[in-house]
Length: 606
Image (cartoon, rainbow, N blue to C red; front, top):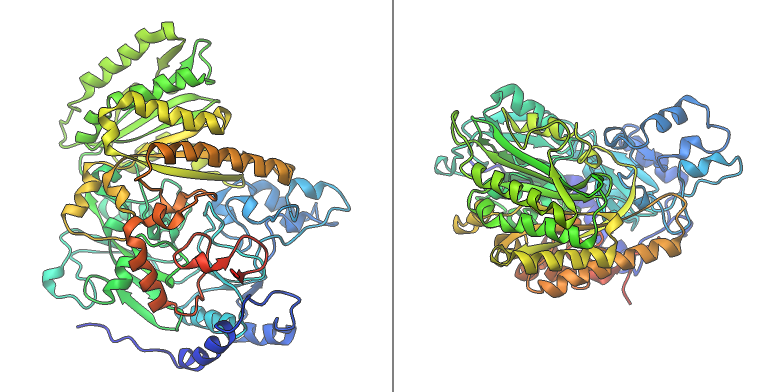
């Protein structure tokens, strides 16, 4: 029987205030404005939350002034680059440039001077430490009745800073109540038994990270089942990763994270708590499976189907280095490395292998490939070709580069589970950034169409042309995140709102720009411009493709089309239906084109 959804009394009471407060103004209220709530109003609000209102500060704030030797500062120093620690601080972002704005910074490095000042930057004014759905409703009520910008943060792992905004009230989901559950069989709420999932499922509350989910799956199913989730263990398992699509090294076989979502529960801007699946609130269900986080409502849980992997995985890896056996490659050498990856891509695609080519000057061009084993006695059918390719590359040493195993690993090895492979991958240094945060960086992506599988040389040339336009020193990543398994989801009529370009893709390519705490705003702008120039080379080479919404570049010129293609108009319609007064706003999110979100203030575009 379908669950009956009721509006709370609070929702009914605050809705008229919201309409009059937000629909009639050009800018959200900002600290110092006459409309900003008084201290007494904030105190009264805190009382309604049971004391769970937090005045947010930047990560390094405890180290400023005369506090550099206190316990809190020492804790910050010890954990400054640890993702698991940063998620526990409401004002912390996983990438510190999103705590900063131009020269308004509060870095740990800057705290060394006795006279240094810690600026609030982009860090919100307050955060509601959410434990229940009612806490979310109260946060929405307060923000809308006072015309304050609202943001939603799970863990703050976002490359466009969509979890933060200056002068905002944050809905902080880190401590949301509930435990990870598994069920088998499972029928989505409001559906008949005929809609029952043939797979076991896992139900994930919004406060949980992927490590929590992986641990639960291993506890219940040992090594026989898995899920499409994040490589980073401390990002939200019911947040922006999934809502923006969610890719994995296993996506060529099992699709995107959103392809495996069976149900969501959502707190809406109007105070409702809805269940969305194939049987109820279908438009919302479609929109939230790919339409992005922080846009249509606050997710309180996601139900995923699991898939069987009873025989573990075969992993294949090697690294290409230069003539001195060190990692720095020339453009020509890197072009040959990409060409070799492209040359075996047709076989990889037919076998649904996933993988990475990660170029980092510290290590070289590293190749990491993974495929599920089909039986206990499975030996990869393409292993012979794989070794032949290795020999072929090795023979090209005259070109000035060499192929060698990664660390002490063999070219091919078997792992009993994805978790075992993931643990191994962190021992070799190449994926160290997946567990680390506290950088200052931005990035951008392009989905590369499946047609390139038959054109490895033009593909390699276009990739390296874009990399070179940015800078080779910044590195790049080429991901075999798309494959025939992912493309099959369209044929199965499992409709989601991600860009149709995903269903025609063979690769996801990524460029980066990084800097440090003392880099000037001029230098940062130059790095961002170089990054965008590199991405423009890829846009020109593949104009009919798109991007991964969660990793879209700041300078993406036609971001609506790039993120969602022909799905955007329908997404915008759902946005207007679910959030007619634009409570949920974030950079390059559905419906945000009417707002300037680039500065400290949030104002409508005039």
